[in-house]
Amino acid sequence: MGKRPQMEEKNTVIPALDSSTNSSSDFDEEQTDNLQDVNLPKSPSILVDNAGGDGNRTNLPAGVTLMDQEEDSMMRLLAGQLNREWRRTSLQSSALERRLRDFQFAQNKRRESYGNERPWGILGLYDHLASIRIDLEWAEDAAWRRENLEPYLSWVDFESTRQNGFNRPFFTYMLLFVCTAMLLASFAVNGWRIESFKTNPMIGPSAQTLLDLGAKSTPLIVEQNEWYRLFTPMFLHAGLIHYFINMLALWFIGSAVEQSHGFLAAAIIFTIPAVGGNILSALFLPEYISVGASGGIFGLIGACIADIVLNWSLLFSKQVNSEDKKKPLRHVMVLVWLILDILINCLLGLTPFVDNFTHLGGGIYGFCCGLSTMERLPAGFFGQYQDFWGRFKEIFIRFFGIFLSVTAILVTTILLSTSDGTESPCSACRYLSCAPMPPWKGEFEKWWYCDDCAMISALPRRDDETNIYDQLNLTCPNGQNTVQNIYEDGITDKNTLRTDLPLYCRKFCDSLYK
Image: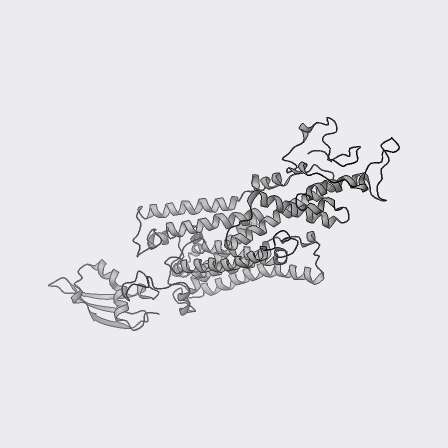
């Protein structure tokens, strides 16, 4: 509807059509969100006085213009869709009241379009927060258009513009493309072979292939100065299972964050946590190689939590939840799902080539970055204005988040560069990212372990007559040597003996750790 509503010279107020044609064909049903069917009640305060016959004198309250009354009529027309009582209530008493009703109208249209159901977990609460942000933007846009006499833009059209053009999540698209290309490259380098489930339970290539493509390896980073390995793991994945889980999370969470806060914010929130998580992993788990975009994805999750914390008071405010009394209870349930989300991802971090230091480190870095990069909802829209200390606290939190992230990355990088690349400052921390699996297998039959036996060396002796290796001089992880007779095992192949070295370590060494 390109023109503001006009007043008919009758005893009821009706939103007029284009005055030049006075034709109903010019009434754009979509642009007015089907509000033309609302019948306005008669209101004595806006009746046109025709007693004089000139049609120019109106019975209006002092200080109220005809334009004010027209605007009030339209707002009651819009608000009538939300609450029948609002059709009989004057809206011209407060600009705040008008903005609130604009916002609640937008929420009502959202429920009509998408329903009340939302995704589970942290994504559900963040999706709710993102919808609040969009509806606030529409309400502010409507207030601006009302003030500047601009044509009305429907909520449907405003929402559609958010999904098109430069508002699309291009950074997320780029990550999906690069990660997919690198997964195909890893299978190609591996000869299009999939390793056994015992070797790689993620249904993917060998460890050597992942190393060749840039997997995190602390000895190579520290001793060979291959510092690029702190960046390349975010584009690699251990296999199909790892890839699909991460890409699904990246698609939903990454696109939601990027569409709410933009390309640059999403890039910062993903990259800094991914690199920071890899540094922590290299520092505390030097004996393991790891890959994955999980650090960046956990960074996005951490930033979502930061955004929710920053806007917690508005999420649970009566203005936002006035139409749904059960919504605060659903928000509490979301916290339960959030805990389950974290537990599931931490269980995934117990498998080979994936580690929880990258996950948890990325989440912490993401939360800190989110405090600095996430745009806070304008509480003033709802009449909640901050005092001096409130504004000071907000500014301090913004600077503190990015300062803490940069400082932590610098400190951990210095610690990593000065380490020997083989020993962890916390040897017991390995159990935060590893568990011998599966639990139903025997002590020497598990698919993977959390000890250091994979890094031992040995000197074998072969019987010249039978060509069988009969003796093995093992150097255990703690540096001690032990000589064992292995003739009864009947091993004649050197590669088979090399594969069985970790098993001999677990059988004969007193200490399985450095």
